[in-house]
Length: 492
Image 1: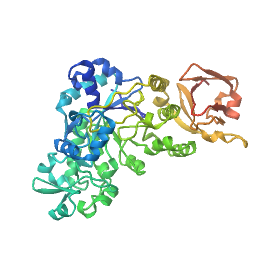
Image 2: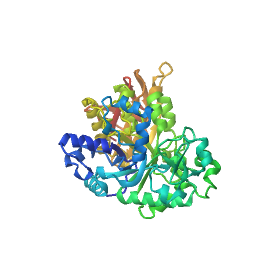
Image 3: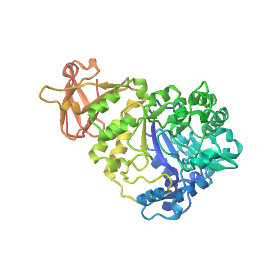
Image 4: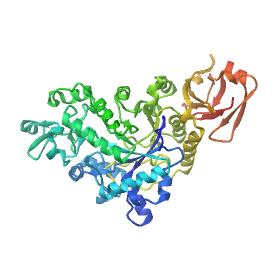
């Protein structure tokens, strides 16, 4: 396997749900080591660089018991799965009892076989790491309590929702600084040297089994955030932040291991500086879903290095389904946008098919839903077209200006960018409004002068001929219906 591409495409799979559906389809129990080859072909789509098998580690029986007693969680389970059965609730994949592949999924041998199947198709494997907390029955509570934030009996008596007793000790429940503690997890101590050593060992073990890791709520371990959350209870902050300590030590033995951060609160740039290759771009997600072109354009005006270190997405297991949130036209416009921007792109299993129900991660089953064949065909074509064009593989990205006329300001609803490489040039223009828009896009290629130039759509069979001098001097004239787009190859 060659080095990671600069702009990888990642496909998230809910592992347990996927295997349950394969088992139902084939009439037998299917584990990771027994997945039929056609099923691997279905997820190793053209244009996918990595599959994130979400939720492979041992889930906590203690955490499951807590979830089964939680009325609000039970209501969310029934809302997503009206015919909920007792065996559908299996516990949270983010309440990890141990970083060992769950035996029901095939154990470490099954994961190794799955990784080999993906590698044979040129696809890498990403797994989860939950740095902020562990399950209440995790081995550390008895074997390495110094890794965890502890309290006293007075704390437990005063605030039983924030503390729990295990093995004769009092531990703090996991939390972030803005919400109540989570009832099913125990807080690690990011300032503990013992914890940092254990974290490096855990990540190194994951790196032995995969090509990259998605770190849950990565910003919670940053010194400023952790100190704000836990104060004096955490002890004295070390001289070095958590991630600059752990990431280089893991990469000393796994230099090509990819680190992806789930990140919020505008801390993406700081986490990139601390060693992460890519961080969630929740800002773009929210702007595409709820704001307009001006907001998106402003976001894309950031430094190019920062852009390359982001993860663009429309949905994941924590977000509402795109098909349930966006109109079909807006979803297609947003999909073209995230697919053609620099940085990593994250697609969520079920997104291509237009699934509308987001099942809670505690469930092993999801409701049956009709497949939107038109949407699936469009998004598969988009994925393949972007990959085959080579724009994200070897091109240089540039945000472009759109101009208009005094009596027509609809160009403000257009966003445009280019990719320039020795092998080809590509232009993307998207109308992010529901109304028609016209404008001129200023192209970066001055050598288009002198003759007629061809622009060929990658998502269709349309070819346009334009005068090269006009393209350079005035820009490309664009007239797009609401939420339509151009994704074209420009021939010099």
